[in-house]
Amino acid sequence: MTQNPDEVTPRRLVSIIVPALDEAPNVPGLIERFGHLARAHPAYDFELVVVDDGSVDGTADLVVAGADPAHRTVVVRLARRFGSHYAISAGFEACHGDAAIVLGADLQEPPSLIDDFIAGWESGSEVVWGVRRTRTGRSWTQEAFSKTFSVLFTRYADLQNYPAEGPSGVLVDRCVIDEVAKMPEHNRNVLALIAWLGFTQTRVDYDQVARTHGQSRWTRRRMLQLAVDSLIQFSSMPLRLCTFAGLGVALLGVLYAIFLVVRVLVGVETPPGWSTVLVAVLLLGGMQLTVVGVIGEYLWRAVEETRARPLFVVRDVRTVPGPDGSPRRSPSDRP
Image (cartoon, rainbow, N blue to C red):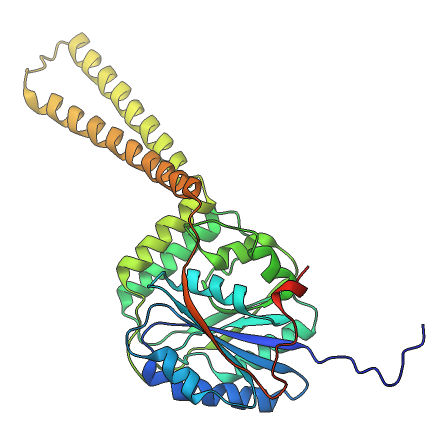
């Protein structure tokens, strides 16, 4: 079929999704970087999608006020703080791009990373992971916890595509975005969901730059919560660990019983006392409570899923249209 020379193939649209929580000082740098990105890749159209995850410092207003009129900007305000993975999901729902790049509002990813993302996409990859070679601004305890979780998660979650070092930033093709939209899990690790989907996945390594404004909201408590949710969502390892622990305690009990019988047979008197009984009761009781607690974690998440509440609540969506006045595609155009 001969193509009409008057027909122009539309340029592909790339969405930059940025979850943000109280990132007002970083907004000018974010908008400036977005402008540089668009100028560095004239073969593509770009849209900036900022998801305000319950900020109280006017982050959304600053983005709208400072938006570059040369490019489309969308600000999604959530009704409260839901968490970064829910904010990313909201960004996927709001974006219109043929691909989407998820970046942090702290500007700790170097501009060259976006070039590598796009190059990987152009080479045929539908998922391009960003993996940090070096990190800044984290204590050794946070770093140790993060590495330990990544090792355990990649080993027991059966996600061959999930970077063992832990991903930071990712590019996903439209086909991946549409599949993630079909996954309504509430205890959510959206990056693990992307890894689970498969498709063609690759990675690029980069060196993280120092944060210039503010501090990370990624506290130890939230890190622990995400670790527990992710392990329970993608692995049966906690249940199996309880099984093995129970078998181990039972084996110790049998060995101790044999030890007592041997002592009696060789004529060694075993003095009566409460210490042995107390230790056994505490050990068995603690093991039983642990097993019940792990089962309760799985049960609680099953209850969460049956409630069928929305993943997030959107307060409003503010759009600053680019020169063409409309996105390259609309949600109704999605397959």
